Length: 119
Length: 200
Figure: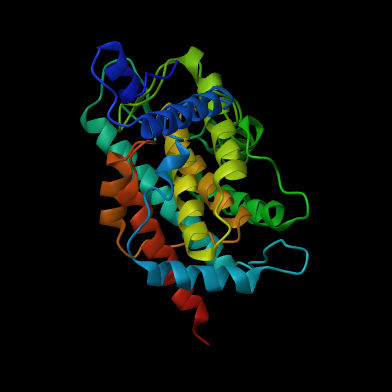
């Protein structure tokens, strides 16, 4: 259940609403949002559409470079093509293995009795 | 106390050949993910995918646990592992959220789209890691899970880390609600890779 909009709280407390048009707009927006949230599978509270674009990094040059690379890999059927080399496959997997080792060594430092260490 | 997946009985409890076999299997996982991400009918992002990635990583070294959700509590670095009963609904919810958000909020314009792809891939990878569904191998499984999500939307997988220390600091302090630092670092790393693939 969504919280009452601020403008409604003003009404409940007897204070005059400062702007009826703004109050109605705000109320409708909150109702729409609440209805939208109710329809979401596995809603976790962090998918408010008003947040977008969230976590947007500042470096737009990187985004442009990646966008150009992405476009160049798209085929006529709409699917990408990568042609990863054996060396790339190996290095990516090695990176994951190194991170897992780092994870386990840190967990070991704070080991609790009776629980297996897990990376 | 050794980690659960450090030495396989299949390899005489010897950590070195165990690690070599895991590395070999991990490479096959990424090759398989590349194939399904580029196919006309990519695999859906769901519990089955998460389990399949883990299964393929560890089926030859730890067959009894490969692809199976754990049945006991574990200690992971972030101390985030959930109770056994919560694993399935948590992974299911994480995957459904990723799918739902992609269908609903995916930007159409390029710069925003790239930021969205990376942020959403990190959200799911971090959520699954934090749930810690498997007895071991969660870091490795979620690394390739994110690689699949990136490839699914046309970005190359993460290969190397030019600055592993920054990545690790960001990864271990991130949670699924707050991972802007991981997003920025992954974007930097992917852009570096993109530049290097442009070289003749």
